[in-house]
Length: 161
Image (tube, rainbow, N blue to C red; front, side, top):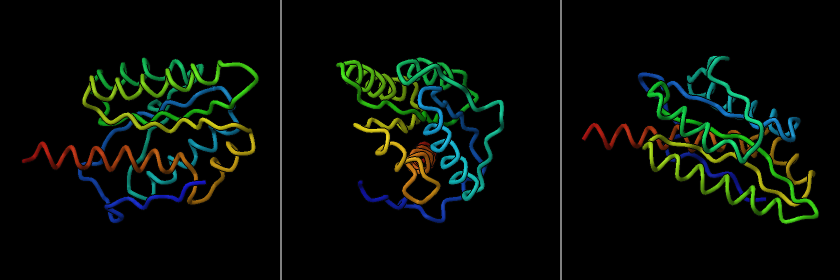
């Protein structure tokens, strides 16, 4: 497992606090709930609260790019955190879903200029996914939340001049 990258702004406190959307896949819910808990925990540690109505349930990882792009275009959200899990099976389905979700979320972010964090696990086994969704500092939901907030903090700084 890769090591956790500490945000370059560990004391990060944004004023005003950003409004974020969190999109969580319903596939592999035990794992995605762990990712969501990790993301919300990290955000709370940095003074950012996500209201229940700003957490959205997605059918799966493939649907997340459209949902993220639509949320970003509403103008209500300064960032979107996408959390999902795709586990390799016996067919090529894994590769298509993983690639589609990855490119789609990147494209949504570039087209809207709103950070869309890619918190979608793409693992070979359920155990690998479970390890990345545990309630510890290695939780990939935490990392996705940190990436989103750090990106929007930098965007604020760039736009301010």
